[in-house]
Image (cartoon, rainbow, N blue to C red; front, side):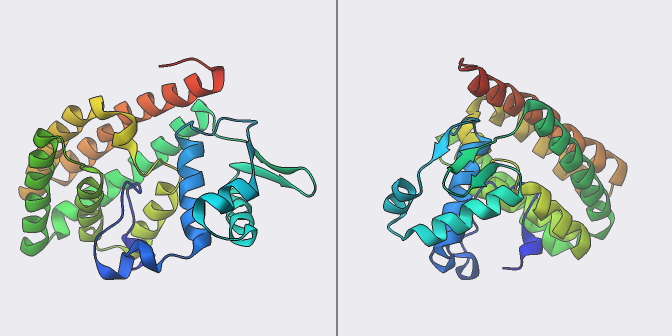
Amino acid sequence: MAEIDRGPWAVGEATDETNSPKRKTARQRVCEVLRWRILSGELPPNSRIDLDVVAGEFGTSRTPVREACLTLAQEGLVRVVQRSGVTVIGVSPESIMENFTLMAALSGVAAQWAATRITPRQLLRVRELHREIRVAAQSGDDIATLNWLFHREINKACASPRLQAMLGDAGRMIPRRFFDLFPEHVPCSLDEHDALVSALARGDGLAARRISEQHFDGAAQLLSRNVQSAASGTTS
């Protein structure tokens, strides 16, 4: 699966063979898990990452763990200092809000373009995924992957590889398992999905853009409070 297929945030892995977790390198697997732990607040600012402990957890050597930490350092999430180890920098509530604002704008444009460019086949797939998400939510099953596929299908329908690539880059800085953190946010998201599918079906680009932008507002507030709580040592 091409990298441009990712987004609007990485909330699960697709199930097709080209994106199988088995095809990921040890560095990629470690990087994704550590990024998730940092962004979700599980690894708070100023905590240390023990390379040996992480290597043991993943059954690998220190080398891919260190390479993963160097990638996270480039993203501004950790500090790697020779002889001092790896220290988590983390993210502030302000930076989270800033990133969600960017994601909202990009996703809004993607939805607006998709409303006029989506094919009947793509719209059918979006509808199918929407129904599957509702069924999964009602039965208490995991909806993260289905949600990821739902939004990916809309982003692909915008027919802009450049915009899809920008969404993928920004999406890496948002926890891929968002609904694991905030299950209470699911009903609101599903209602927004209803409105978004309706806007796409009638070709209303402006409505699709507005709904997509609003889709991130509540999510941004929830995640920001979570990170703030983790930083202050309190519970949200």
